[in-house]
Length: 211
Image (tube, rainbow, N blue to C red; front, side, top):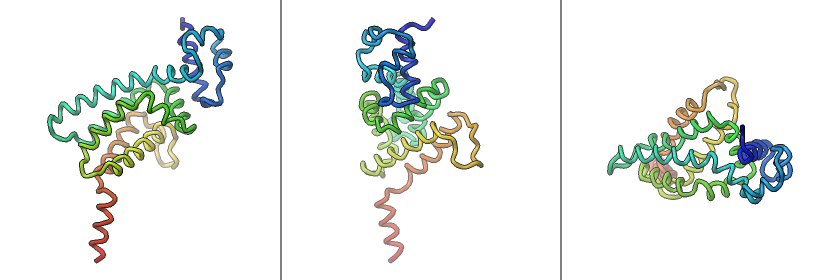
């Protein structure tokens, strides 16, 4: 039997994913979870704390899996720069595995992104692990300056979110690929993107060719 705390978390995760954080009241969570007000305040305090508890339930195991994978990648690289695709695997494959087991969390993350709440979520739940991946990627693609690297990471997160949460835009793209297959295709695509010359370098090369 599901205990009161899990009932509240399950209900909040579903409602936040369907309606967004702003569109979901604590009163609605209480009613649909069939619990009393005191139970919510006892376990979570306020609505914001409830959101972060929902996030932690999936974000903490995801972060742990990513860090274990990245540790392995860096050990295998020794003192050399890690392979960019292997760093991307450490970030994206645990994401695919999480999504396979927790589709409601995927919907919730998509909703947080659409509602503009991801900066708050990242700062609270992913900041330290994200900085480790930034550092690993900077070693994997040392030709990129900080600004260029961060732009490409920004593009990576957008591509990941689109790959996870949306059906393909074109009918000829198979829509039944599982998350792992989608992510491995994305890794191949992103690897080339991260290895591409920096924009400033590319522009300088074009200028030289045009002379």
